[in-house]
Length: 503
Image (cartoon, rainbow, N blue to C red; front, side, top):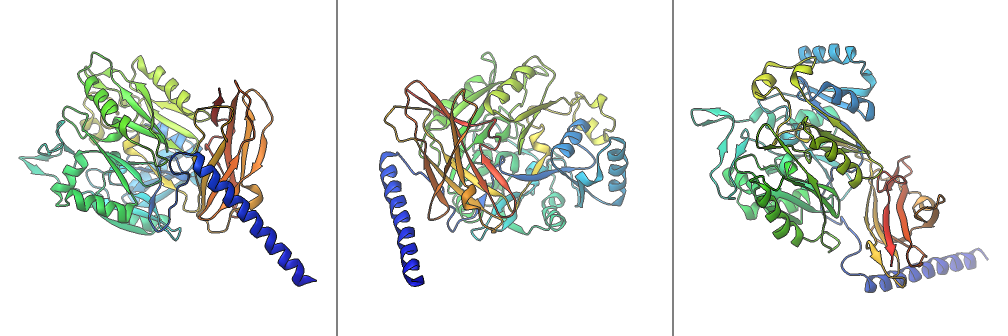
């Protein structure tokens, strides 16, 4: 009897898998392009919006103290200090500002001339196929190379005297002690990987302006080797190299655009009478609009109007950091600030958007170096703002979710199938009954839950059974791990959701 029940149970499971496979095959035939992301045997570099446990900054500060307060309240601070003297100085100020010691961890690391720019020399989060998170440690040997528009322009260097280039060996070597302090292994990346000029969707696609190839060539890493090493170590199977966008600058892509998620890009838009307006528009029209996402669809490109400050400098509103459910934006004390915050809010429903000015005269503590570096007494500039001086510390045991969303407009006969890939990096397993798709008609208050059907390779799908013309449907994905982590996509769901309209 027991044997018969086991056979019956086995046939039920096989039947369910067969039905799932048939449904999956049918839906693939009706869909254009790939439906799922698969990490397989590749490394995977985390995207900025993925789950993080806190933010890495440097003391002495290079950011507004009010930003430090918010970062400590919203998540957790990881403050890099050089020695006991600087640590004690930080403790004194943190105490006076009311920062709870439980919300901060000090990490000892050497500090060179570029220590402020944790984005540039600091580590990325790279997940191995086995599910281990490592700190990607790219090379950072020379301080602040700049060029003009041409990708093959001769590199110039902002810091240095008498044509002598200032090296940044100290900052380049700082990731190892950071890894020790965080108890995270470090993966050596034998190529220049300047963080402000490297942006990824978390699915094996990267974006950089072409100065990065120039920097690597200067470091004797040819383009072919650079791309090959990125595939092998960072997991970047597609590397979108864009044109430089500054007349003369560091060309860091985070001052030009921001990936909002796997399929949307927010791009700065200068005033139409600004000399860089045609440069930006050319990159948008002739480069970005020709690219495809990992789901083989054009990127949705949103625009963020920027404005002038300090004569012809452009406010770097894209130089913001997305950290869990909050977005921190640099402000420039110009009329466009308010519109920039509104653009961020409209683009990222459910996120809390916080803006920060940086008048050095209003700061309770400003180093001599800061005063000398920012001659106009303002701590942000067009090529160096908030994103440049912060780095997420990602969650090594995160639930990672990526979703191929339904097209924005569908007809009434469309099979409204949502495809998603979920990886539990805690390795403790997802709770099957808690892997769900939630949906409702826009305007309704009650969510309906549908179990996600599992396929091999951490792939899932579910169909939304609704086909009424003229209605808009909202939906999101939810997953729970036995580690206790709960994750949604979009991450701010149910406040922020995906949507489609039935025509």
